[in-house]
Image (cartoon, rainbow, N blue to C red; front, side):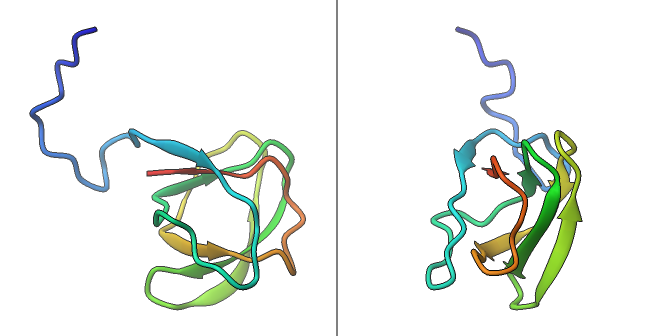
Length: 86
């Protein structure tokens, strides 16, 4: 495999290069801060941002939602199939 962009510096405007399943949890931050959240089934996702803001956001299914979240809460989250991208 050849990665032509291996030595290119990435920024927030770059496409994400990692993804992980998110299990909403009221007590624990995510292992990685997200750049984008994507869901399989639309709904509300309660998040705490990297700067500490806490609120609900509606995320449509299959539409990447750019947000730097450090926690996804179980209470208040109705979306399912949640993935974080970094």
